[in-house]
Length: 250
Image (cartoon, rainbow, N blue to C red; front, side, top):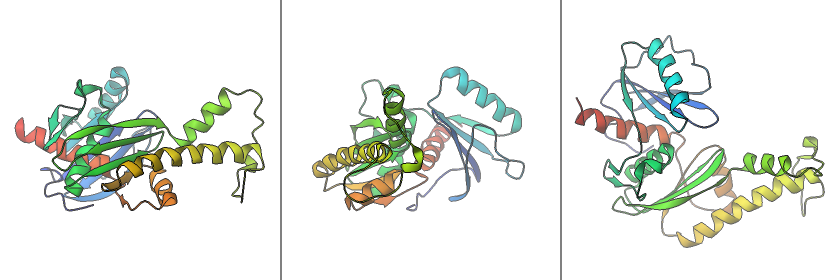
């Protein structure tokens, strides 16, 4: 990660990124990432007591409240900062007419990438969904796309196509056209994702591409796209936005 001058004003920070399928906990001490854990249950945090918790969630209000309550009980002395999508933050302007409708994970990735690159940037976050956002050199978020991720494409296809006989044991690398149903599904979904990203790359070849998420690096490497890999992009964005909020609301 590039030197973000103030990842947080707090010494020990816990970023809680509550996604649709799991919760990602990222622990910072100063600018250094100490550890990352992904779990729906609270991780073993007895050795780490954050001075501040930055909480970002795309879950329902009820689910978010339950997670917040569990963490608050575990860390009664920690300061809290709920991070949400806004019209502007950290010098970045949200493209959405209703800023809160932009997923907070996308927003935090946009903010962090702008501060990392300081120029025109395309952000690709590939996990459950493949999310692509574009930011110009002056920090204007121009918009973006959401498509199903690789695993979601496969499971949706299999769940809605009764006669596909899928044998997971047949999912092996092969040459040429797929010669089994499992390869046809897996490699077909992969090619769809590659085609989507390749079309976008042709439109934004003069932008720096920043990638995060489980599948993004491999997908773009297959296309030969020059990229900057930032596995902690969303967490860094949370610390930037959260620190700004705390400074403005002492």
